[in-house]
Image (tube, rainbow, N blue to C red):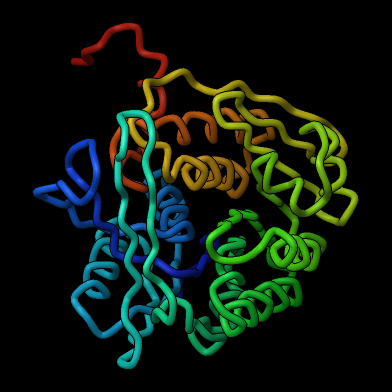
Length: 316
């Protein structure tokens, strides 16, 4: 058992295949193989920034499941994994159709990750955590996955563990109406809520980012963080509004940037830094994620954060 502080998260991580060149996937001669999953991305981001992370998940008894476990464990994350012999590891495929756009296809119906259960997450692991981070992707996967998220959040609340919730809407998994219903159930139980402005609108209705943050806080959380992409972010924390501009980078792949942002913010939160430091680090980690292909490969380590402000292209 890890001693506090550690951040606990869980969810589905899938194998990831992506074309090595721009164009229709049907004409791709080679594909790269990796992994990706919102919650494990956050765990990797935390670990690289110096915060111990624990990730729980379920994979199939297959080579892709071995890949998921090996890659996350190699990043120093404490991996607690269940192997399901009767369901496959999920798969996602990225197609870069133009230099500026890409399409992500998911093959996760009936996957091992969608069958995660409360038995896969030890109660003592939850009660000993500094913070539990959950994602809105999990309840969209299956009724059992939703029940697991509710169990974990309820257990964390019973043990006075801080709960972080990233709405992370996926339109190919469920409708906005179904997502909004679940979001409104979970948000009041969370201490920190992350959402893009479009995701927040699913939960609390359309409005300007400041108003969205106020409506989320009105449901119970003490912190609402609205991610605005290239426009930066804002956060309503204990009644005070904070704003953060985005770092300017030449984006290569924006998938995973939101997870990197969350990891940066939570790192500074659990290490006791103030709101503006949390947002500044989050903006930097989100920007780093955009600089290379892949969901998490570009996430920075603590000593690399100043590189975005470096005046010289070479450091010696």
